Amino acid sequence: MIHDGVKGTARIRLRLEATADPHDNAYEAILVPAAHGQLFFKNETVEFHDTSRFTKPWSESLGRGHRESLLPQIAAEGPRGGSGVAGHTLRILRGCRVYHFHDTTPNAPVKQAGYTSDSETLHPDARNLAAFLLRLREDHPAVYQKIVRTVRSVAPFFRDFVLSEDTQERVRLRWKQTDSDTVFPAGALSDGALRFICLTTLLLQPDPPALLVLDEPELGLHPFAITILADMLRSATARSQVLAATQSVTLLDQFDVNELVVAERVDGSTQLRRPDPETLTAWLEAYSLGDLWLKNLLGGRPAPEPEQQD
Image 1: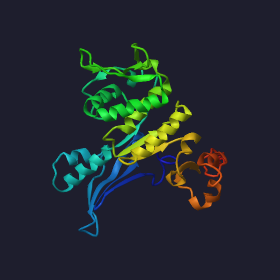
Image 2: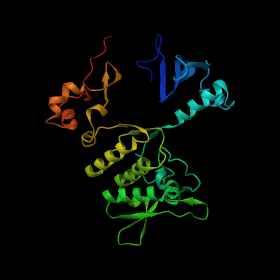
Image 3: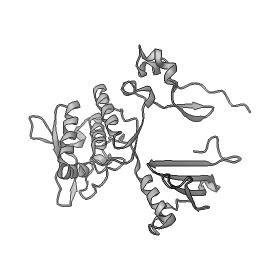
Image 4: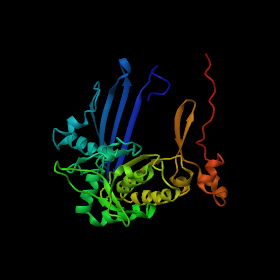
């Protein structure tokens, strides 16, 4: 992760700020390289600021020289003082989840049986999808039915999930199609349909994580399914912050320029920037965002880099 190798004052600085008016929380870590490619904390800090009462935030260093975060250890000490702020900060960080539903091979975790009790939160690879859907069907039937209807909107042959616990208290993802009593396994779904089911369950669940990060959620989806996905992404922002990385023109067309961040490789490093809406106003009157991307007016297109001089 360190740009251009370990040299000089190489370090990684991470800072996350979370605001819930009038309270602000922040977490900061500075990581520096050690021997054998490892990293250790040069500093790890938590901050708390009650903006209604104080002009400056309260800050505490958790320590230095350690290789793993001290947040869990400090938070376990109790609710007082710094340990209370550490515990609150830890809950914020654990509410940031990255999801990958790319694996749809025969041995993919989502196609295997899982424990029925493993249903509190949807895992990043959807390995507990069946158990999670079973809990939604029992505790949130309206949400469950909305998931079923949404899946039907892009796969009209789909009728419902078949979710039942076996003698070992495990459950496997199975389903039925319209006008048939045959029970099909998850492997009978196309890769795109299975990914869409995972995405629909994630985005329509009643209590999503505070931050949802999705990498290329459009993979394997029909263009119509991508438009439905965009609607669910926008709907989910009412309860979470959503960050999706995409290379899909169809998905990009569903959003506004103010919702876009362009990632580009510049001089060997990655830079993130927001396009200037004013410079694109005239173009957007005649073209969509996807069109502008294809015309290379937004950036983000691979380009040759200058050769390194010896």
